[in-house]
Length: 481
Image 1 (tube, rainbow, N blue to C red):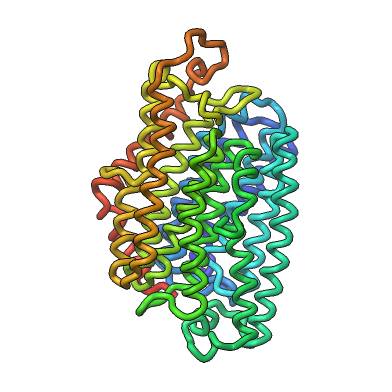
Image 2: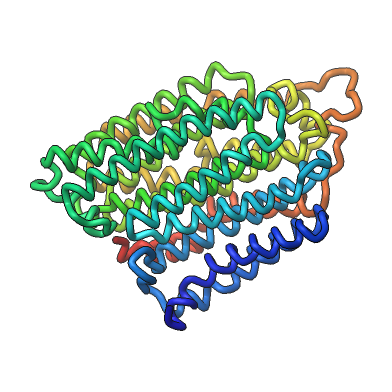
C-alpha cells in the first residue's frame, strides 16, 4: 500500500483502530465514560482526516475499494451520525448499568462495515462490509436482553442470514454470467439492453435486489422493520434507521446510477414497483399504529420509497437529490429518535403515544424539538425534509416520472396525518398526576441537550439555506460511477 493509498483510507483505518483500542480499554478497566470518550475522539479524529483523504482522491485502493469525493461525503455523514448516536444514547445507557461499554465497540464495528459499503467497488468487499454491519447489528438489537429485544434480535438474525444467503447466490449468478466482480462492470451491464435480457443476469439481479431490499426494508421485504424497531433499544433503533440504511443506500446509488435517461428496462420497472409499494404501504400501515417507534418504522419504509424515486430519475440531479434527501432524513430521524431516547427512563422507553401526552406543558423545548423533527419528516416548508422532497420532485420531473411523483405526493399527504397525530398528543393537556420517572420529570444532560439543539439547527439550516450542502453534494456526485 502506497502513502497515497494509506492517506485515502485514513478515515476507515482510524475507526477500525479506535475499535481495537476500545476493546483493549474494556479488557483493562470498565468505564462507561472512558468508552464514550475514546469512541467520540476516534470519530472526530476520523472526521479530521477527511481533508487529507480528499487531497489524494479519486483513488482505487486494491481491487476492492474506490475512494472518491462521493464515498468521502458519505463517510462524513456516517461519522457525524454515529457521533450523534453516542451523544444521545449516553444517558440512556448510563441509566442501565449493565454492559454499557460493548455498545460503543459494536457500533464502531458496524460503522466500519457501513464505510466499507460506501467505498466498495467489488462484490467481495461489498459482502464483507455488509456482514460486518449485520453481525454487529444481531447483537445490538438484543443488547437490552429483555424478552422483546431478544425476540427482535432472533427475528433479525434469521431473516438477515436468509437474505444474505440469497444475496450471495445472486452475486454468484451475476459473476457466472459476466465473469467479473467489478461494480463498474455491473453498472454497465444493468444499463445494457443486451445484458439486461440475459436470463442468468436477470435471475442474479433479482436475488441481489432481494438481499438489498431487506437491508433497506422496502416492500415486500419490510416485515421485520416494525418489530425490530420496537424491540431494539432506542439508540440501536436510531443506528439502524440512519447509519445502517445510509451505507446500504449509498452502495445502491453507486450501483444503479445512470448518467443519462434514468434507470430503465427490467431493473427500472422492478424498482419503480418497489418504490410505489413502499410509499403507499409504509404510510397506510403507519396510520393504525399507537407506538411511536412502530410509526417511525413504517414511516422509514415510505422514506426509502421516496429515495428510490430520485435513484430512478438518474443523472447528476437524481444522485444529488437522493444524497441531499438522505442527509436531511438522517438529521431528522436522529433528532426524532434522540428526543425519545432522552425521555426514556431506567426500565421503560418513551415509545407509546401516551408517553408524549401533554409533553409541551412539562418540557416545552423538548416538545418543540420533537415537533420540528416530525414536521420535517412530513415535508413542511422551512425544514430540511421539505427541501429534500423538493429536490426529489425536481429530479423525478426532469425524467417525466409522473406516476412515481403522483404516488409521492399522495402518500406524503397520507403521512401528514400520523405526524400531526403525535403533535396533537404532545400539545394536549397532561394527566392530572405526574408520577416520578415520567418523561416530563427526567433530567436532560448537557451533551444530549447540545446534540438536540445542533440537530434542530441543522433541520432549519438545511431547510432555508440548502446551497451550503447542495453545492458540495453536486460536486461529489458529478463523476459518480
